[in-house]
Length: 166
Image (cartoon, rainbow, N blue to C red; front, side, top):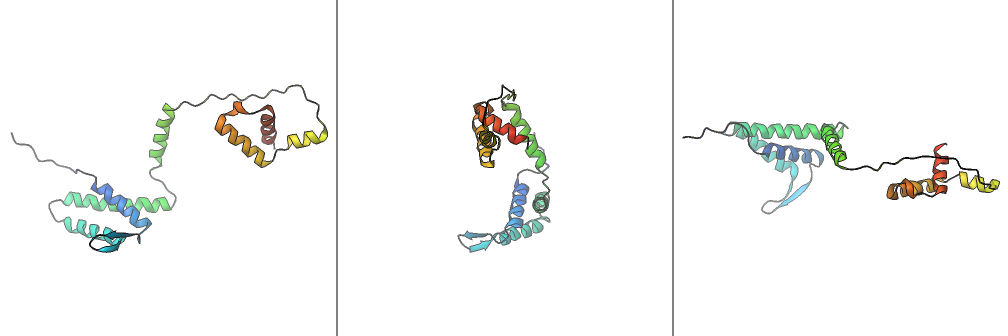
């Protein structure tokens, strides 16, 4: 029994061409030091492969060479869009983050604030206690990030609460 010929595209060369074009778009003057040829800019290496793919369109692997040119085009367009601030691949990142959140447990933090009986403080103590500097707030937030809200002292919680009312 004879095997039917395989139809379709096989391989990842078009994707490699796309990555190559993205790199050429970003840093066209990057230089490789090739063993026989010496220093060669990446844009000339890419040009060699582009010309080869154009010539190969008329050959036996016309579909593969068209795929190479399509990869080059997509790599160029994608990189230009990224430079313009448009990320076509953001959906991939969002999807991966969603899957990561499925398997990562998040702490259940319940923040409560209860007023206890007021403590007697002098006027200067009240002023210095209620007015926290930005450095103190940053240190408190760093502590929350490292050890959690429960690790704060009563005074730190009060400073944070007072700072949030500003």
